[in-house]
Every structure is written in structure tokens, then in C-alpha cells.
Length: 332
Length: 254
Image (tube, rainbow over the protein chains, first blue to last red):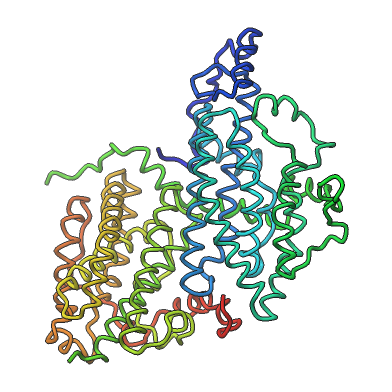
């Protein structure tokens, strides 16, 4: 399969069948019963229009996050210090692009082409994880991203891998397997700096301070302000609430960060012994929405890089789409 | 008794080519014309950089050279022996692809010749990289064929890219100023001239199948200089970037 281009029309538009425009109550009931029993929904199965729509949105944004997420770390491949780090980082970023590919394939089973998804990414219609709209300023940022952002992503993806849509779950299982290596890679680089020279420690602490808010934003707005998630949880599109995932992340990783003698820029951050849950200062949610809507420090740069890649690669994709066209050789 | 200075010279130029070509390949990560090519170039970047690392380790462990990280990341530009071909910026995909084709076929031929080298570390390494290079050359050949056969624009770009890269690629085979005969006499490798001819024999059939015109090679002046420290203006910025973090504190562990 070729693609990646915003230059082509979406080949399989309007594929929703007429009867699916109005979900039929019996079919809907049978569908919900299957999900409740833990069955997986497969591409040819009947599904409500809204289920399809939400899944496309979810998987597409996940795919975009993988390929856009490759950019901040990718800029450090050429600067990674030493052979070991350099090779690990290239392999890691390569995996992320591979995840994008897997996820676009999974989303395509729902009837939206890769070209259409990339178009929507480039036009700004379709979003990607906010966390990638922040710059990776130093090598320590690579360690923080590799350790903590990947850890956060794993929390989210392990949950989603138990969801109801077969192709997405299978893609996620493979992704989680690879992500666990990324986490090790990030953790290793993180520890190296945390236990290194004073300048290395300072560099790491600075990166941690800058990334903390984007990391807290990563799981999305607090449950109390999130809309429409009940139906999505019933359909097993969304598998855990934002606050639960955030809490799970804090539970697993804050102690690891503190153990290394590092601090986190939130004086209110603590585990409540009675409730067993973590308490923290709410990150600035206005900033979160500002960045989602294009106002982050790197939104424009990220999309410009993708546009460059799409425009410069246009002739290649065009050539691939006509593999049978032969250049006519003069006979004499 | 092997001539260590000659071996060192040969290893450094091979390793530097691999490192710089790998660096260039890695710059495609996230930017390829299709995602599948991002992945392919990243994968080849790892292999090339891995080959460079293996060669620097031979230098370090067998010939008294510096630690590979120090040697690769802190050496001044004039001590590099990379060819001008690999130093050139990536340009567009046509240039990068043609360079990949010409470089990787040359690399494959070089390692094939080392399977019979009198120098054991070369024999072991060539055995190890053989499988990787098989895929690199398969990839290069398949894309050259496909893009040369897919319409005017694509064909023209391939031919242009070949015209731009051929003299640079011939520069891979710049003979050593001092050690060529010693290396041939010691049966370390067959020498640059011989490799050059084997390379022409290998690239020619692919180009013919792709209907690309190989320029008259006798009229081509190979771009030499890299093997004795004369480089393009592109190498210094690349090295500066590569060592940016390592140089913050070369004594620290990263």
C-alpha cells in the first residue's frame, strides 16, 4: 500500500452504508451485547455510525501522534552522544513511524484512507497529541520523552489494547511490546544523566521542569469536565478515565523520579494515604486548549515539516501510483 | 607481518564512509516520501552506523586506536577520510536514492572482497554484514527500477540524479596515496582499481534494465580528496552537529 499524500482525493469516501445512517435498535442491542461479552468487533461487522466515527477519530489521532512524535526526538538522532545512544534512538524513532503505519492501516479498515487522514492532519482538521507541540531543547529532553512520555503512552495504550475493535487492539498489542523497549531505552538515558555530572543532573532537572505540565496534560482534561465519555466507555472505545490513567502514571513513576533525587515542579504533589490517590495542582487547562487549537510553541513547525515531506515526496508517490506506466523508448 | 599503518588507513576510510552515509540516511527519519521509506532509511542508517562502529572497534581493539566514541565524535575534520559522495546533503529523495544505490553496491562489493582477506577481523566482519547488505542492495535496485519506469518526471529525476552522483561515487575508489600496494601485496583486499571495475560491472546491468544512461566513464573525472583529508564544506557542520552533545563533556558518560 502506498500513500501518505495530501495531494490525492480520498478514494473510499462515503462508504457508510445507507442503513447505517440510522442505527437500528435491534442491531444496536446485539452489537452492545457482543461488546459487553468481551467480543471483538471486526471490520466487516455491523457497527453504529457513531462508533465508527469515534474510532476513526481516535486511531487517526493516535497514528498522527506517532509520526509527529517522531519529529522532536528525530532532531536529536544526528546529535545523540556516542554510538550506543545514537543507534538506540534511531531504532526507537523508526519504531514510532512503524507504529504510525500500523495505526493508519487499522484506521483504514474503518473506511478512511491514509491519504485522507494525512490531508486532515496537514489542514489542521485532525489533531495529534498535544505533548508533541513542545520543543525538545536539550539531550535531556530526549531522556525525559523516552522515559516519561513513553511511559504515559504505555499506560494509555495498555488500557486501549483491551478495547472492542479488533484491528486496533492487535496493533496496540504489538505497539506496547515495542514501547516497553523504548521505555527501557529512555529510562537508561534518564538514569545516566540523573547519576552523572552536576551539569548533566541540572540539564535533566531543567528538562523535567519544562515537561511536567505537558505530561500532566497528556491524559486529557479532568473527568469532571470531560464530555461524552460514558457511551465511549460502554462501547469500549475508551477504556479508562483520564483521571484514572493520570493517577496510574503518577503512582508508577513519581516515586522513581523522586528516588533519583530529582524534584517535580508541583509542591502539592503527594499521595493521599487515606484515598490511595495522588493529589496535585491542576495544570493550566487553558494552556492545554490553546495548544490544541494551534497556539503551542511548535504547532506550526511540526506541520510545516510534515508539509515539506509531503510536497517533496509528491513525485515519488505519483510514480508509485502508476507502476504500469512505461517510458516509451524510441525504436530507432 | 601486516602493515598496521596501511590497515589503519583502510579501516578509517571505510568506517568514515559508513558513519557519514549512516548519518545522512538517519536524516530521512520522519521526512520520507512515504512512511515505508522513512522506515527503510532509518533501518539502513542503523546498519551503516553499526558497520562504522564495528570497524572503529577493530581499530581500537586490534590496532591500538582510540575508543570508538572518542574517535568518531571528537576527531577534527581534516583527520576524517570520508568520500565526498557521502558528505553531500540529502537533497531530495532522487539524489538520496541514487547515492544509496551507488554507495551500497560499492559497499557490497568491498565486503565481498573482504571475505577472502588475509586480515581475520575483515573476514569475520564481512560475514556478519553480508546479510544486511543483501537487503540494502535489493532495496536500492528495486527502487531505482521502479522509479525509472514510472513516467517522465520520475525517469528524468533518476537520470539527473545519476548524472549528479556518478563522479562523486567514482571517488569512493580513490586509491590510498601510500598503502595501496602494501594492502594488495598482503592480500588484505584487491585494491581500489579492481573494486572500481567490479562495481561498474555490478551497477551497469541495473542501470540498463532501468533504461538509465551511464555516462561515458572514461570521460568522468572521479571526485577525489576525501581520503586524504580534503573535504566538502558539508562535512564540518555535520561533524559539529554530531558531536554537539558529546562535546559538552567528553569525560562524562552519556
